[in-house]
Length: 250
Length: 354
Image (cartoon, rainbow over all chains, first blue to last red; front, top):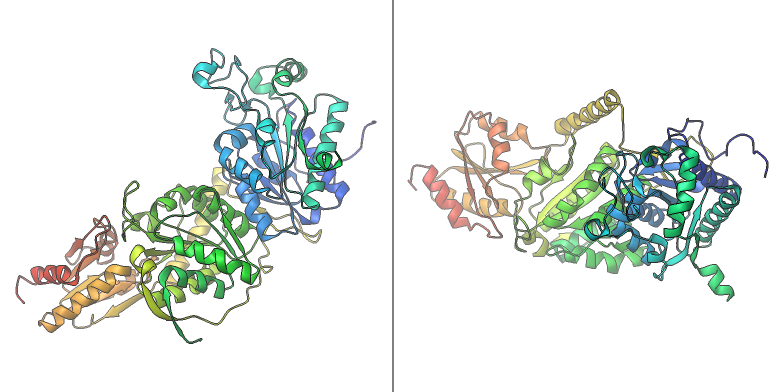
């Protein structure tokens, strides 16, 4: 693939604040490359959520709105309904999307709200220092599951793509990761498809990116990627859970 | 102005908003404001507007935040418990410096409370809506016509000061029918807000609508700057109606539905030789401190009448700087005081003599 020089036009010059080995940077770049390639920066509005990625509003060069915790799909709905000509995406973590914002997520999806949701699933609350997330794996040790997540008391993790794929308004629900070059390419393809679907007016698209949190997982960046392969991917299988484009071909 | 039509308060709010150029409504059903949403669902499609029923008040206020951030004229409507759920979003709207109109057709509380008219959300509207240092402009109409007139003003002031505005109605004003003249429909330029997040068209730097400031000195500076704007609102936007205040021995202070009752009680008192008067705050924030302080120079006593256990009475006492006695009469839980009850209180304060 070779090393691509420079940064996408749709990213600002602001230095990213993310920890070493965090996959946010890769995903930011993929989103920005897609916006560049589709030539829609001038009409794109991004919605930042609460969590480590809140500062995306400093990193994406398109117009940005910062939403309350979990409310990004509702804020995005307001923007998209007010400005249908805009390309609107949210960028949300697992706590934001699958815990406090589950209601907004499910209803934006079932309405077929014509937006793109980039969902970072790293099975932990990063910004607040590593608490149990709705996607924390059974047995996983976090600050608030110090003996490992006991599903009998702490409940079971949520598989978001599987959950949303049953809803009629969803155009695309795909789970990807960015642990190697092949997967990064697939992730970008999925993100691009999600944006294209919005431009075509097909409805709600979600791209779930299985991600790392080396700092709160207590692992080195490379060990984190291995932990992701060994533990996250078996529980959160990669794949297309719904794709109205593919269904139409069948 | 068009001809007079007979309209329900809630429906008049909706039609007035459309006349004021509002084309975006997000809401969730709750009694006794439902007619606002129902009317909007009927009218918005006819004027190429957006009506969307959200999954909760939490979602609807955040849709309002999104549309406001995108620069369009937008509103929601709810009743007391719904405002509690919207509190978070209203704080973000204030912290993001975007304008939006919130209608609260108040009902009895706390908790699920009841569905009859109440004024128990005064504190919530004027002082403790949600977390953080911020204010909303709060209007308290007392007739359907005034509601209509204030809707247009609310949108304009929200835009002018870039802040949330609330119309604090109640179940009585919302449900009653009165003749109204609707204003001529107005066109609004939704593309005039240079701060809006609606796509930079590769012609400017990106706009960010945000309420997060990690550096405390920066946040303090921004809040202080916002409060300079609030000071301007307090200096320029106070509204109150005075009725028979000049020669009064006792002045009632009441807003909204309880002001209508109080006015009848004042008339009864006058007929019976008691020089009563009424100050009716039209803006609850900014509170009409000037009108009340001026009256306190010559009025010996005040009586605040509310459909609550006594909330605005605090502001009346502050406005008269406790230099005059301020008594309170109220009913709550959805009970509306009768003119005779209020009149009896006036008589009692007059030393029991009629």
